[in-house]
Image 1 (cartoon, rainbow, N blue to C red):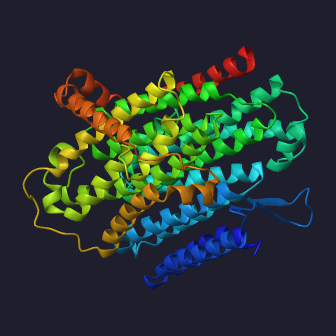
Image 2 (cartoon, rainbow, N blue to C red):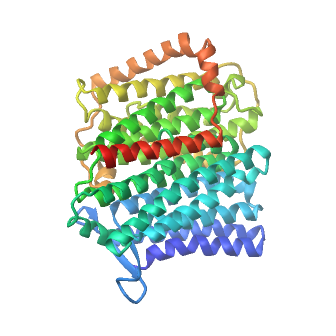
Image 3 (tube, helix red, strand yellow):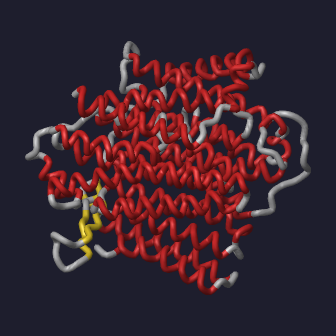
Length: 535
């Protein structure tokens, strides 16, 4: 039973290699078989070690000696991410399968990426964590550039080089930890760090690790790779990038912060500011766009900022809300990118200004998109309402932090008021999708938005050990949501819709690779000044 985490890593990698070598249409169905086997194994493993209302952490050492073996560790957090990974890959594989069932290279890279990502989630060894992060970077680069167009190659190279800079900082931080503690086992370092008082060297190490993680998580100001990658990648890849792969950076954020927090290294104020800036700037750029994929890409940046605000809190409930929003965001953003891909295919354009009559032309797609929009804007009875409420109402209304989140929510609502114009208008296509698998993914994801929005108490307790029972729908919260929508409509009607000079400048604003590297170096220096010099 303890070996199941190893199988979860090996099965997709071996299946990918078989598919690549054999190159047969029917062998590609091995991808679906592998998903089914992994899903069953994960459920059995979770059920076996779920005791006393929580998943009991398990550690397995690969090797003959504990001090030099490779540790694999699973706990409630990693298992919840494992299930999110399996579910997201199910959705994307089904979404792309009818169009990619003979594309052996595509299926190979998809499955290989899954195995690497599952390894990242379960390793308890910092060097192996680095290896998995680097492999993820390389494979995602290939998938971003998979269209083999000049734009996709540029975006893939941009993604590779920026993320490699971040990973290099992460590696140097690991070297400093090994030099200090003589081990790269996360559990051992966490225990031994308690005996080491906060020092300048440890703060410097923390800066290097968190700077690298900030790039992977697409935090301000090092998020510039994300919109470029989304703009060039296929819809299914964008769904994975936004829904899950970028969450790998947030997973590292949680793990590394937890490792340092035990010894008193808690720098919540800094990352609240970074999260707030990411949320506000991301949504401002999103509102200025007319390309539907760019709108969703910058929206992802904004939602990551909201998550970091929750994760940077010392309040346990607010922190749990940040973790829950990782999962909620994955669900509705995967759905939104899939729907956007279907719209682009039908209308032969990426611009929302050229899309009309979706509700009449493709009602299933329209309803699925509406559900996702209600979720991301925090509508009651949908999953986004729960996690946003947990984060926002953890702050008092007299607290500046509450109003920063309130403004970000208004911005999110404004973006999707703008996007909702695609629903209205005459029927433009007497067409329905005959791809039953894509229809199925829309239905399943839509249902999940409602499930997470109504069974959140059970989900929170089972996976996160958090009590969300106090988060209930009240008349005041419903009225607040209506007010947010009203303000959002006014902003759209009188500021965004006229498409003034400022909006157009924001839309066409871009950063070169050189400037992006300057921003990363500046971000690194600011962190050093704050953590190493100021504190």
